[in-house]
Image (tube, rainbow, N blue to C red; front, side):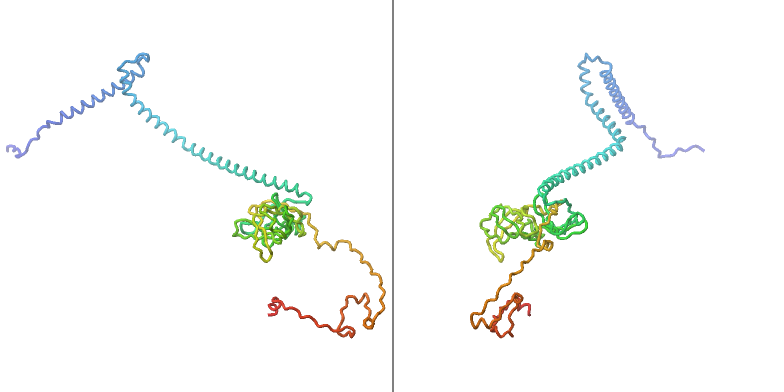
Amino acid sequence: MPNKKPQNVKKRAPSQGRNPRRRTQTLRRVLISLAIIVAVAATVFLLVLRNESQISIAENGIGSLLSPIQNVFSSATSGIRNFVTNWRNYDALEAENAQLARENQQLSLQLESAEEARIENERLTALLDAQDLYEPLDPIYAKVIARDAGQWFSTFSINRGQAHGVSTGMAVVNGDGLIGRVYETGLNYAKVLTIIDPRSSLGCLVQRTRDNGILRGGISDADDEAQCYVYYLPNVNNIMPGDEIVTSGTDQIYPKGIAVGTVTELSLDAGSEGNYAIVTPSVDFLHIEEVLVLRDVVETDSGSDNLTAVPTATPAPTATPAPTSEVEATVAPQTTEDYWSYPSAADPTVAPQASAAIETLPEDEWAAG
């Protein structure tokens, strides 16, 4: 049986366009490779084999053409090398950074400590000068350990008490002037009432005019400035802002001559207590850290029991005068023993007198109601 060839089968025609295209691509690659080889050879020749003293025009042109390429490769190589080096040293750099941060913090703390020591040195220097000034009054150094709530040091506690010779009534000062007085003591602590407290009052003196007055505190947490008020000034018109106020010693609490403050204003609107002066204290009552307690207490009347009693003179006997009239004859003579006796209504020799009516005060009516 004869072989039958399938019909309608078309033979694939050979490709006419692929071979020239391949040849073109191959030729292009060869030319690029030759160009690279020539460029590399020229570079090697220029950099290695050439004589440095002789540079031709061609060498100069090729070197100028290839210099930017060299710079790019050099920068890329340097960046890669630095990146690898920094990556390897990252842990070391991080540890060094942390160490520098700790050292910086320590130096900041040392700087703050040195500044605090400088400020404390200034305070203690002023306090030492005040201690020399008040040496006759037996001062003792004390630190503030507690204070009442609020921005002002109206009352506070110190770390000295009965064990250190501190008792109630002692004056408390610092390098600027008078602070207040001790009003309560314990074994190793004491509480101080300052002059700006509304419960405080003291005898004061205008240093220039020598006028005496009574200084009272009147501070509250709402006040922006610490102020005191001086009442009962005899000649307020002669006082002017800037006059210094010192303790007068007439209150038998504070020694005389301690600086209290400076007059800032005068009130000529007389109230129930007359005109008054407004005084700014010498002490900064916003910042009190160390004080001096003056242990030489001013003597008061409470110590009069220890004084030696003065003997009372015996009165000399007096002769009773003879009556000179009938009226005098009816009055019996009084003796020394009956000198302080009052006549009674049963005595027929004394005529009864009409008693004066006692004035009724509004306070009595209020109390009776």
